[in-house]
Length: 186
Figure (cartoon, rainbow, N blue to C red):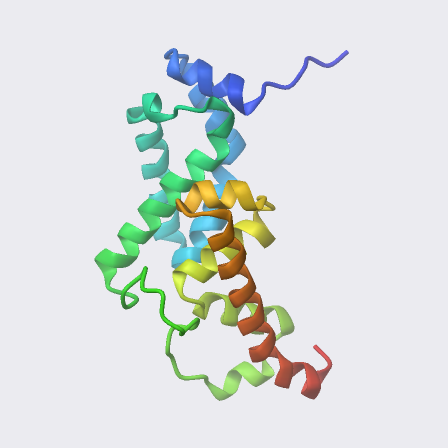
């Protein structure tokens, strides 16, 4: 008979009580998902690794600020998100991160080689060009399988904002991919 798995809530409580083993268990549970999330936001593995490490350092330092132990996953992703945006700001990779204008994509020239890239590379290219506020909700929903409430908690916005940004990101991607679908049955 297998032991009952430890819940996120139990791990969070153990973390807050100073259990060193809980830190290792939380790390093992979340390191890969956090890395994927950060990688999709910053597009550089070294920076993503640094963000994940800083996320765990902040988790330990700020463990008492987790008021709802059942929300451990959302809390961890929120820390990672904040770290990723801090890195993006430091490196001046994008213009204003939180402006809510009508643009969805970061302006950049489309190279001719994208037409010959594999389907997944094309889609990834468009996802990577989304402004961070649209990219993060799409990544959290589609790649990290979070529900709207969890995403809202991670990004510090309402569920309605999450749904709106997700809708706009999907619509923009669909519009960008439409000519490619018609041309190559994507």
